[in-house]
Every structure is written in structure tokens, then in C-alpha cells.
Image 1 (cartoon, rainbow, N blue to C red):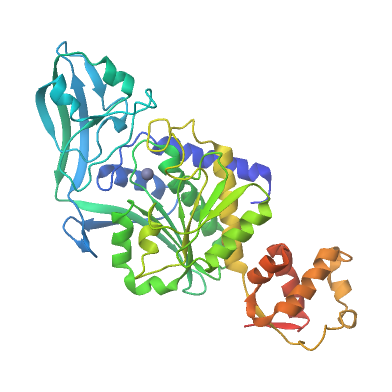
Image 2: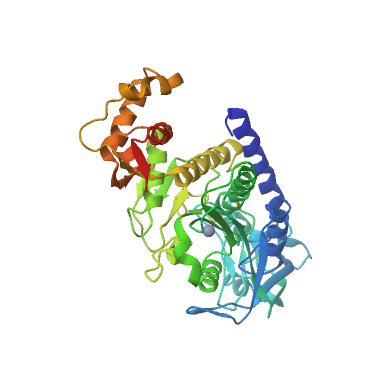
Amino acid sequence: MNSDQDYAYIGQKMYDLMEKLYPICRSITGNGVRKSLNIIQKIIPIEIIEVPTGTEVFDWTIPKEWNIKDAYIKNSKGEKVVDFNKSNLHVLNYSIPVNKKLSLGQLKEHLISLPDYPDWIPYATSYYNETWGFCLSHRQLEDLKDDTYEVVINSTLEKGSLTYGELYIRGETKDEFLFSTYICHPSMCNDNLSGPVLLTYIAEYLINLSRKTPLKYSYRFIFVPETIGSITWLSKNEDALTNIKAGIVATCVGDSGNFVYKKSRIGNSLIDKIVEKVLIDEKNPFQIIEFYPSGSDERQFCSPGFNLPVGVITRSMYLRFPEYHTSADDLDFVDPKSLSESFKKFLMIQSIFEKNRTYLSLNPKCEPFLRKRNLDEKLGGHKGDETYLLSLFWIMNLSDGTNSLLDIALHSKLSFEILSHAAKLLEDTVLIKQI
Ligand code: ZN
């Protein structure tokens, strides 16, 4: 991945995958998640895991599985005034089955609209609360006349399972990077299809990379229903969590908003430093915010019993953009270019994680005499490059065993890549050694 063309190509592939996933009605359980994971499985070899209804996962229990075939509201003329087939957002997600006739007044108790955005359909859910409802645009709601309405939701809520996808790319060590995203929202793009499509292609890239050069670290990708899915995954993998040295929750990464990074609960963990360095070096406006215990799956990863070094990367952040959780978060709200920019950022993060090392200077008393070692010659194409020379001095000075290359990059404001090359040179000339 070097040229702009490569990134444009991958941006389009992510968008194409999003177009395929967009029409599917997903929820925290059910066939929508399975179908979506099957589509992703055609690109990367994820394992699909089923956890039965009733399984206890920490303080939670896997709920009954929800599936839906059809839903509508018909007026007395037999016209469908709200139709699930036009948008799956029309049904309150997880609605119990219903088939009855109601007056307008009775019906309105089950209708949800957004008066401030009268053309948009809101996204609402009724997990863990057996009820039913419809979501519709405020204009549709206002058009409803006094009438008797036939209300049908052809859904099932019964014993089944919760489904999630997982992929593990084994590196030379068990230490791993966790990429997490959720896969439970119906037809909406930034929140949340952008996360799964981005991670699918990051995984594909790393699989291809690992075939050429073995990876030092292992990489894990999980595609879980939000909240209950990450709780389930944590509960099933509790013994191996110490392998996670850094991680990211990917959400809302498909629109053109500036990048926002929400730190891990630890606040100065490896991932916090890596993302800070990547965002600073890109020189575009960005925001870094402290951890707080609401939002997405970081709530579980960063719960005090685990306190994992996992942060969140978004473009326009969840809850902060008007289109959030509405029908306006559609295929026009996201674009291939923005997806490809997110892809690039994620690869930069992975690259620093993969290449970060800590060295110890073997010549800590005064500066080494570089010329004696022909370092000028060894600099090759970088000969005379002040930044390169400076990077040698920074590494020699800060490599006292407590600073990693990433720490040196943050402190010196030099590029991680340049420092990484310079470190190799110093290692070759036996001025530093890796610890
Ligand atoms: Zn959401």
C-alpha cells in the first residue's frame, strides 16, 4: 500500500462491501448477523461462533434470538402506510410479533419519529424489553388520518443463539493487537457498517502481508454485536486477555469528519501513544478525548476488571452528528475516500505497533564518534539529511532502556519511520541493542 491509487482502490472495495451489507436487517442476534458475517467470510476466513440463548456472560444472559420476515401498517383502504420492505429501520428493532387492528390513538403509542428532522426515520431498539413499535418519518406520522389500522409484525423471538465472528492472525509472539467492531445495526452506514468493512480489509491486508513477511505480533479481529457481544467475547476469552497489548474499537470511520480518538481508560497506554503520534504527524485537524464510561464496546474492554489498553477511533463521533441513528446515515453519508483515509490511519497504527522496539545504548558515556564508524556512508541516500542525523542522536541519548522508539518519536517530534530506520543502522554498528 503505497500509492494514492492503492488507497483509492481499497476505499472503493470497502464501499462496495458496504453496499452489499447495507440492505440486511441486523440486530444483536439473528440471521441478519449470520448473513453479514457470511458475506465477510468470503473475503477473510473468520470463524463464526454461536453462543446459545440463556448462556450467562458475567452479569448478563444471552437473550432469545430475534428474526423478522415482514412488518407493515395498513390503513382501512388496505394501503401500506409504513412498510418494513422500504426500510428495515421502520420496525423497532427486537419487536415482538403483533397482528392486530388499532385506532390511530392506540397506534400512536407505538410510533417513534423525529420532529426536528421530519424526513428521517429514527433507529430505535427494544432489547431486553418485550414490546413492539414502528419508527417513521415525522411527515409520515403527521399524514396518518383518523382510521383503523392493521398492524403486522411478522417476527420471532425464541431460543437460538448470539452470533459473532473472529479472526486470529498468528505472529511470532502471543502478544496481540485487538481490532474490535460491532455488527448489530440495521441499514446505517457510518454507525455502523463502516467499522466492519474497514476491519475486513485491514485483516485481508495483514493476511497478505504475513504471507510475505512473518509478523512479530499476533492480530485478532472480532465482529460482535455491540455490548452483549463484547461482554460475551470477554467472558469466553478471559484467560487470554493479558496477551492484548493494544487495541482499537472501530466505529463511525466512513464519513469525512475529522478524526477523533477516545483514549483507553489507562490514558497513557501503548495505543494512546501510537494514535497520538499518528494523528499529530498527519497534520490534519483532530481531537483526542479522555476515556468516559459510555459509548461503544470500550465500556466493556475498559471496565475496571479488565482495564485493557483499548481506545476508540471515529471520524464524526457517535452521538455527535445529526444523522446518527437515523435513515440519513445512509450510503450517501459515507464515501470511499473517507474510508480509505481511515484505512491508511489504521495501517499506520498497526505499523508502529509492529515495529516499536526498546533499545539500550552501548555507548552511553558521551556521544559516539560517528565518523569512526562510517555512519555517513551507511546513511546512503540519507547522507547529509539533518533529520536523519538528528534521529541518530535522539536514539543514542534516550535509549537508556526506559524509552521505546515510539516514546522517542513523541518526544523528538521526528517521524517514527525515520527513527526506526536509524535504529536499525545503530544496531548494525553495535551502538545500541534491543532489549
Ligand atoms: Zn449505534
